[in-house]
Image (cartoon, rainbow, N blue to C red):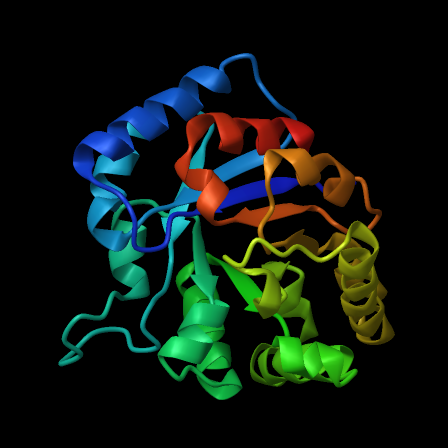
Length: 249
């Protein structure tokens, strides 16, 4: 049985005071306990503060990105070792914003996946299609290409030790959401694709949905057979909204 995971991606948002209020609200709201695993991924500069605020709770934390390099003259980059210095469990790899805004292609995403996993971090590998790709009927081809780059670099077995997040790019920050059945269809495709190579990996890997998940649609999305939780953007910045999504899972 796969344990569900709800991970909050704060993106480039936050302040010391705002973070404190947010984390304190989430921690207080989860004191009764939920069966899902909960994680937050703040901007790197706030990870030390978040670590301190989460002490004594069951909430995990992670990074939003990492370098494919271990160390060196790479101004502005964050290495896997730096994330591990603050006991990060997860790191987001290949988010659509990294792909579209910063030119990260499939090969670079695969390198980052390998570096993260070899260091001991659990990658949350993001895959997803653009609106024009969906309208052209290319969703499965795009997802397959993105997955194949990682499989070729790391092997199918490595996917079982990671998390996949399906994020239709057309539904991120737009207010649009894939219908539960649309999301389920892609999640099922991902699992079936992996099963061709390794049924155990396909059954084990957690596949999250990321694309404008909100309290009012979370339960219906998470009820789908192959959706194992969510990678939450905007709603993770509000304690009550994030808690409602956690409970829905």
